[in-house]
Length: 370
Image 1 (cartoon, rainbow, N blue to C red):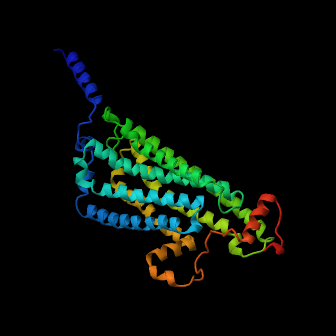
Image 2 (cartoon, rainbow, N blue to C red):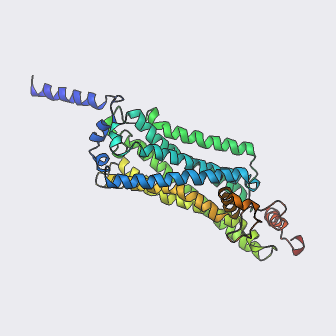
Image 3 (cartoon, rainbow, N blue to C red):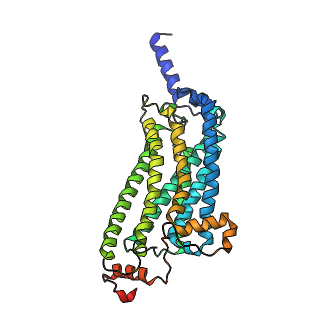
């Protein structure tokens, strides 16, 4: 056989190998091709630390987010669109805890023994939890825009529409988590496989990270615009309206709660998304393998922080959650708020209602209306 024929035969074999589908391979095949032994490195103290910290975080996530959901169900003051969406965000955090538990039992040296389908399930759960949180924050942004631009505490969304929005959030999240399984992967073209996600194609990582980062940017811009609007209107009304200062500033406090949740989400998830983007761009000198698990723990920390933010920013939420833990408080009289007052105003609060009406009608309340 001539040398030219031999080279042609080798090219054909290489081409057929590159385009061969590898659905029946175990993950060690793909990890070995990614030229990394990270899965073997995390077998000692590092893996133990990650598992211990992850276990503590997951237990706290399950407990605290269950309290948030139960508080919204139990307290009638929370039966408004914003708090239904807040409870759905807590449900997304609870789901993230489930995803991390599954990850902990399928990481380290176990990673290489997984089948392709189990690995897809592992990553799909994580992707679904992130998408659910992100999409829910986008829906909350819409709800806040509908209400805050009119200086009202809550929007006029009906329960039926809120339920439909929540179902839409989870439909989008499940679909995005299943996209790689549905075909956008590198099992039939392993030359395009990424390093951090050995059976995800680099093009999918670029699409996924860029779309999430753009969503972050859009939400930050929207919330900053609403924040500046509310601050300006509140300052204008503060010199004309009567009633307590805390009640006049209630919309601003609710906006601060939402912006704190969004800020924590962006801070906790952006480093991991940037690392995935660098991997998608095939940056071989960026050392992405050495930081991926620490950034994953940082993302997990976000689901820990949210219930703390809710309870710290809202007195009624804090009180309701505390009563569910300490049943003996049920017999005690209502304590005076020593923390930030609740952002919920009762329907009989004429001072607050007057403020809302003055914004929508372009009038100013007088002292007799307080």
